[in-house]
Image (cartoon, rainbow, N blue to C red; front, side):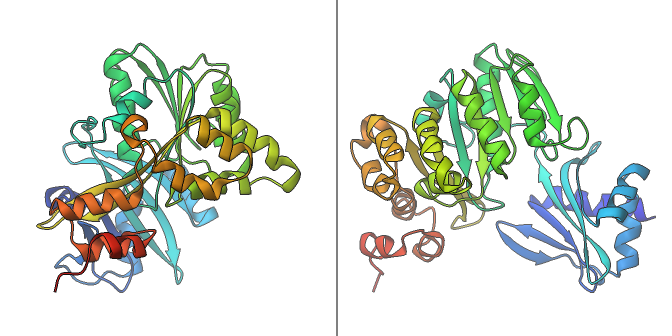
Length: 356
């Protein structure tokens, strides 16, 4: 009974077009629809209910891992229902779970109405492209669409290193080696070290979460590979600072030099509720040119924001403020939501005056 219950719940998540399902004891099941949590009209769950449902989906090995570490990340494919990224955890001693839907059909950049500069960026032979933003901001979807574009147009060997593997690409012109942490490799840093011996053209790193991984990513980008990665940062300049700050003071000048030559672009995105339902991505786009590279090398990251505003027609750059203001003026998002998600709300206030 428990397995059919959880499968029905996950089926309803897909049917509603929701992004997430949350199971927490003493609460009814909750789904995230257009960014907001909404209860499903079902009774409140106990820890035993959730344990029975969740354990029906995993192997004995995964169960042992969860009981030892109280955390479990994995990807789940349910035939005729969909694919999900799952996380099991404990709250007040009870098991709880979060499921994120992963579309089986991978969107194209055109489907996402992505800025045209994205198609130019993926033509690069080497360097580091970072897609950043908070959890649930669509980073994985944007990266999947970029890899999808390469797959359709270039003959490349693409290695993805993720925890767990999310989008599974069908080989078209390119060939994919999908590697899951814990299943296919021990860690991001280990996988990256050996990836360079696997003749990749393109490497996707699901999360650049520690110094060792960031260093390996920069080395891969410097040695002739196109590397895609993610960070939980909300602005382009903030992303550059975050990478540099991972290293100690005496290492920072070398990292700034590496970053100035290898960083191709930072796309810092957030997903905002659209007027009338659905969500839309607003992206701050930094594309490294000679001036930006100099600012990174000379420790003048605070000047990057104003540099991004120059010659945008040629560079393809845009600030988050410009992206948000355009969406408000097009009637896609409300002024209130633009204000709420803005890194610089004072700029929104000047550019989009409150209607009286």
